[in-house]
Length: 135
Image (cartoon, rainbow, N blue to C red):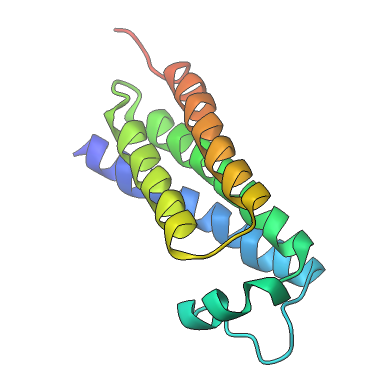
């Protein structure tokens, strides 16, 4: 039961961190154009060129930090298994690559988002392993 809770709280932590960096910080510092609807995938697809560069950079940072934090939280709660961390990491990887596939992006955005989320998984795994206790 503890591992289920670790997985859920790890994912919530990851999603919350993505929200903070992508929406609260990124869109505050680099506001979307007037009339933008970031919850409408069709709007985003059709208007990707109108989204400020800084906002896009914060999306990449959000995915990177989100996966690390989520995996760390899951491992810290579980303390005995990396499986919750791997589940959180896999969900975050899948979400990021789905986002890359579905939304048309510049080449730099696609590569940096993909590479940094994989690097985030590796770092999250490393941090998570340090949280495990051997009894």
